[in-house]
Image (tube, rainbow, N blue to C red; front, side, top):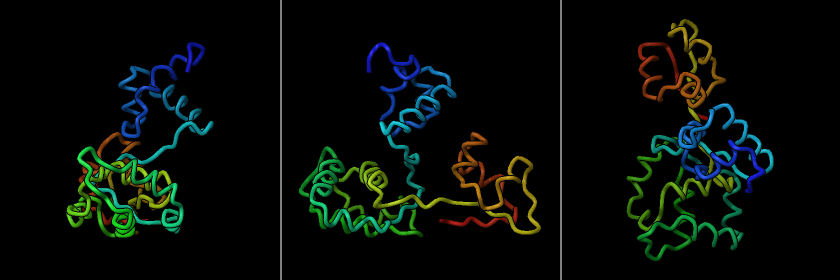
Length: 196
């Protein structure tokens, strides 16, 4: 990056760290949100970054068919082991890391998975473990889609989102509220949450 770069780009790049959301990056950089989105879309177009979902322990992750690439690619194994180690890392075996990835499944939120595997996770930074898996395509985030029943009544600002095509993330982003608030709005409505 040099002085000829767009001013918004210069302001936001230091805050792109794999943790901050686009909204948070625009706030930290004191940059307009729409200009921040546009600058990030340019970086994405040119392959300078990858967009990942915001990390939460309530999220659900599962493996993809690409998990086999981690098993056969020793370079990817080394990269993984170097990236996921926490500061108090002890001897971590690749076989244990691979088994941890394989134990991620559709019905288990990350928080519960962490509690079930807390001994095996010693020396592993869970945020980096998940991030590496998502970026490399060996795991994916299972999204929640609220779907209204035939006779469901919902608050007016939610009606258009309950046809099964909008994920909970999209709804939260559009309404600028958290998932708990959306679920509270849907309380008492004939709505099913579909995971896919």
